[in-house]
Amino acid sequence: MAKGRSQFVCQNCGAVTSRWSGKCESCGEWNAIVEESAANPLGGPKTSPRKGRTVTLADLSGSEPQAPRVLSGIAELDRVTGGGFVRGSAILIGGDPGIGKSTLLLQAAAALAKAGERVVYVSGEEATAQVRLRAERLGLSDAPVALAAETSVEDILATLSGERPALVVIDSIQTLWTAMAESAPGTVTQVRACAHAMIRYAKQSGATVVLVGHVTKDGQIAGPRVVEHMVDAVMSFEGDGSGPFRVLRTTKNRFGPTDEIGVFEMTGLGLREVANPSELFLGDRDQSSPGTAVFAGMEGTRPLLVEIQALVAPSPLSMPRRATVGWDGNRLAMILAVLEARCGVRFGANDVYLNVAGGLRIVEPGADLAVAAALVSSLSGVALPPDCVYFGEVSLTGRIRPVGHAGARLKEAEKLGFGSAVVPEAVVGDETRGRALGVQGVAALADLVADIAGGRSRPAADGNRVSGRGGQKTLPAGARTQGSPDRPAWPQMPDDEDWVREA
Ligand code: TYD
Ligand code: MG
Image (cartoon, rainbow, N blue to C red; front, side):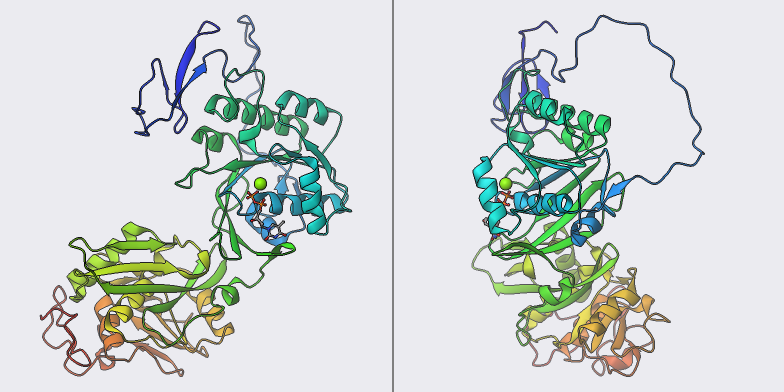
């Protein structure tokens, strides 16, 4: 394309069009199309076509050393990166404004610098004095971090060429600009060109480059998704801004796992690592109210107990509200549908709210059983036993499907003093036997509903008990005598409440 010609680029998805329009054809976003110069968007030098040279083709086999890593010294951060920053890699960290990205990276930079590594921290958002003040507040003023407040990529690269840093932090990628692209800073073209230049620097120099990225209103890292494809790892720093807890999560990692999380607490002295997050997420729960269930979850290799809170309240609306915080709304709709269709529990005239306590976001389907327990408990007004944990996936047929790591989940619950667990029937076996806590296997969601309604969801601590098929002794007398597998009969409710449809 000739230099000086314009193109129109959607700032949401990066689609390029030849004319402006109010709505992006490819992603549907309104008012996101901006005119940018079409000249050489990646900023590579313009050269006349040259003859290619042959490259040596290699075999897949052959021993490669493990990727060399630098430990940041912050255990929760190293867990998420998969054992430290990989030299020569580029990492993008996104998160809401004020969540603590700059604080985390300054702490990591200081820890590395104190360990004797060369660290350069480039802030495009704050002046040097502001970063110094923050370091003072964090008690890190004595760490030998090299600091710069700069936004020009050319100047940053020129400065870095005289150094051999192990870590370069760029806070943030949206504030950078390069003369190689002609658009305004923050536009897709600029962000892409700047990210490209910094990633190329990382590969050439062997330094780890950490880029901070802003997120848009709906939680995506601002700028084109293409930056996420360019970097080696993408992390998001999440949390409920009003609470102290923060979770660092990987969504992409070319050198490590993507299911690990790092848990931090924001204190007056910066971010503190939380080594036992279960204690924290269960901190001050209200044990006697209906509508709460403790989910024994897994985040990567680490078990994590969290409280699921449900509120089912009569709705004044013709279209009752369903709202979730920390859980997938579609998944809630599915659980409600299964409860209605397979267990005869009616939610139709009620608003339903679901919340994961502590600002955590759960993506594991293993939380289904705990969610269902909390929903039924709230609807029926029957509080669940406070020392009971739940895990298991609910299928559309109403069966409870097994989930992995049952042993680790139960061990964590035991460690925190829980006395019983309700688990999928299929995982009851060697892993669950001989434990200090009582394990109850459930085969179908209807069994759980019956148990909650009968106030019997507390298995004895002396062994495994199975309800449902072959284990009907746990159900209220006569509860399932007329049912068929497709259409089970409904248990008698304690005081004949109208929340269960007549069979
Ligand atoms: P910051 O790291 O600037 O967030 P981001 O870079 O993600 O925008 O964090 C700012 C917030 O953290 C601010 O609301 C104040 C709070 N904070 C503390 O509570 N304690 C501290 O020691 C520091 C440095 C910040
Ligand atoms: Mg910041």
